[in-house]
Image (cartoon, rainbow over all chains, first blue to last red; front, side, top):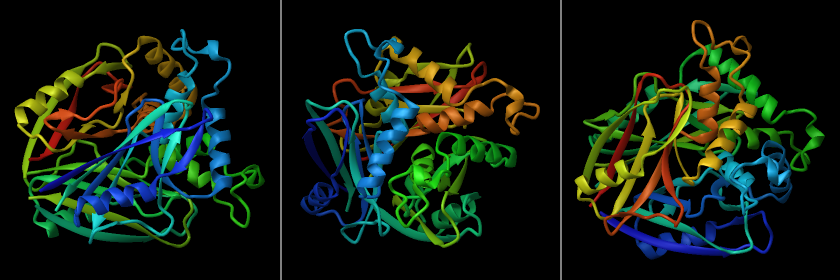
Length: 138
Length: 138
Length: 138
């Protein structure tokens, strides 16, 4: 069994954003030389997500609005977590969107349907944050 | 290390449905000959889910109502993604229910609690859609 | 390839709770002797979650309030699943928070960001319930 580890860092200038990280995941796979196995991609921070969905700006706008409705940032004082912080809503949004994805590796490629793309979902940006890519297989 | 890949296809006649796919996952495991490892089961489409829950029709009805409340289909024009499409809500519902499950394989079996069953969750059906089963182990 | 399996049991005296199970997961890893691989940690029950987030009591209180808003326990009769049961809301809460986490194992350690901790999320307690830890790797 082979294993490979890559860490990605993102500094998003805004509080929230979705960033397509499929190219970086493909690069990690190429470096690994693994042809059959599983790739785990996870946020290393608890106010961010890694998810798979569509690379379509209208949808990302809809996600933003929808998550804000499910777990509003304001009023900041509505959350007990917000003592010296203001990111409680980001901990909720991250649970809806998920911490991680696991992707099949087949014949040296991400084994994806037509529209699947991997995104980093940032809900409390404006500082450097990390994503882990771990691949195991042969 | 061994690996095995199976693709399942579902054409759901309605927009939304939950389909128990545990038998097909068991078949894939039997074909693989793998006795210890991990099984990944994921939707290959971004408006569908794979999830583990109870095979109980009342619950599936409740999920349907609940997801419609969290991310309503109507008004279709309420989503920017819906330009020539009407499935933005399906992209939201899929994030709540999840893209994938990872299941432990122990002694050649799905290592499940009493009530765990694997479902395909369709949120934008009426066309053929695919599920990937990937197993790695020994 | 090596594999290791541990089962944890929790009997939560209340209906709902979050329990930090990171120490038990570390123990399982130490027993396994695995240094590079993946760890799956999943609830074996369908009204409970395993998730990764912050060990902060204010946040856990916020999660409790937020989940109750998204999927209220009352009125019990509002769910078709609640025939001789009253836990339909727990099946919803578990989907929001997730069934499982997959954690990278690197150099014999949980490959975690600074604040990542593994929690058992109970939404229908007051009886013994199980969590599965399965590790594969080398």
